[in-house]
Amino acid sequence: MRCLQQPEWGWGWLIRAKRDLSVTLSTGHPTCVEDLLPAPQQAHLFPQVTVIEDIPCHLATAQLPAVEEPWAVLSSQPPSLQTFALYGQRFGGIEPHFKDHKSGAFQVLDSGLREAAALTRLFMVLDSAILIALIVGLLFVQNQQRSRLDWHSQRGLSFLQLELRDIARRCYERVAILLLKALLSKSPPAACATCGLCLPS
Image (cartoon, rainbow, N blue to C red):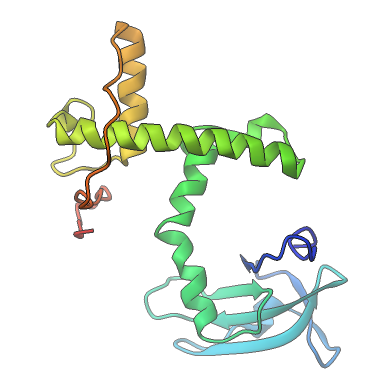
């Protein structure tokens, strides 16, 4: 959070807070997140709090109907009900992308890099690799080959995971990857979780 608050970055941010995090309210009263969680289907907004001794931010807590655990979200922007909608976006696209960079595909944490410039260059390379894999993965599915690597009744693997597996197979068999083509103008069907529920994209 200290890093993100540097003015030259100009980033806004939302970060989930743990229950035992110490928070100093705008009144100067110290407490912990656990004591600020609301009753079910309610939300509490706490502007101008301080965490980790000297980091100014804002806090929003809620017990949302469709979520098992209460949310406590720290934010660089004044809190509102929109805070929870913005934070919820991480689960649709941001979270899977992070997972691919970490445990899902590339093991970025094992690089040990902490310098912003070095990490920026690394992510540029990885994102280029992801784009290539996504294009080839789309072609893989378009060519009716998905069932060779994905045994769900409907597509259960992401395009990235499909193509990483296909690339590993092709390297083992010493077969060239598919030629890259332009992406389709219409999104293909979304991947399904193992529960079997699919939604059109």
